[in-house]
Image (cartoon, rainbow, N blue to C red; front, side):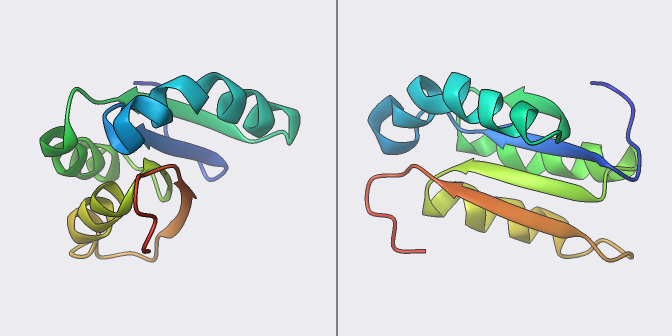
Length: 102
């Protein structure tokens, strides 16, 4: 993982979201973030169970900006992992799940 900074985002990609749609769309999403000048580190998880620990570790390393690329479960897990953080966090979602009820 790279260094956390005030303008660096931590992106969590759940490749299982949307029946694999999140992983297929990730190159396009990454390109769009880069074109917008958004600096980020990415963690592509193996399954949703890794999202919470990845976010908790990123918070410990100083990340304060998060993007969840996945479905409702990914976003829910990210928010629950971030909830006990003592500082204000910024979160964004890229909805590429199946139901997209968020």
